[in-house]
Image (cartoon, helix red, strand yellow):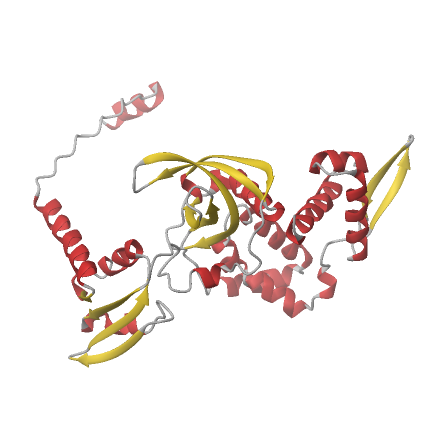
Length: 351
C-alpha cells in the first residue's frame, strides 16, 4: 500500500485518540487491522509532524492522549483580518461542500465564530448579507455519507472494492470488482473514477447509483502517473469518450452568455454576423454534450458532426411529440379533513 494509506490511517488514529481518551496501542491496532509495531511508527510520525500526543499509565495500562489545549491550527496563528476573511467565506464554502465534509466544515466555521468578538460577528454578518450562493441542483448525497467514507478509505488504502451498480443505460443492476482511483465533486454530484477488471479500463460511476459496496483486503497498484485532470482533458463532463470535432451556432439572444464562459479548453469562438457566434470544440462525452446543447433550446444549432446533429434533432422531435399528446393526470386523493371540536365550534360561531 502507498503513502496515501499511511496518511489516511494516521489521520484516523489522531481522530480516534482525540475522541476517546481511553485508547491503547492494541485498540488502535485492532481498529485499523495492522500490527502494534505499525501503530507505534504511526504515533511517532504524528508526533514528528507536530501533534502533541503523549502516553499516560492508568491501572496497569498505557493510554494515548492528545493535549487538550491543542486546537489543530490555532486561531491564534491567524490575524483578525484572516479569521474574518475565513468567516466571511463560510456561505460559499458551506453551500458548495459535499458530504461527508459539509457537517465538519459547518462545525469548523462555528469554532471560528466562537473565537471572534461579538462586535466583529455583528459586523461580519452585515457583510454576509451582501452575497448569496445557490448550488446547481445538488444531488441528495446525505444518505451516501457512509459509502463516500468507505470509498475514501479504499482509495487511500489502495484496496479493491466489490460493488453493485445501477446502470441508467441498461436499466439493470450490475456487479463489479473495481480499483477505486479518485472521487470528484461535479455539478452537485460525486463521481467515482475506478479501473474495472471486467473491462480492463477506467470507468466513471455516479455515487448515488451505487446499490451496495464492500471493501476487500485485496490490494491493487494504481498507476503512478494517473491524473483525473489528464484523464478528462478531452471530456465535456465526467465521462471520457473518444473526442470528436464539434461546431455549434448560437443565436444573438444567447451569444454573449455563451461567449463569456469557458465551456471547454479546446473551444474556439468567432462571430459570424447578425450577433451570432460559431463555437468549435474537440470533445468527448456525447450524452453530456447533447444535454448541454438542448438546454439552449432554439438558440443553438448543431452544424457538425452529422450524428450529433441528428441526435439533437431526434430529442427535439420527441419533445414536440410529448407536448402534442393529450396529457391526463389522475386527480390527487383528497386528504380527509379532521377538525377538532374547538375549531368546529369556532367555525359555527363565524357562520
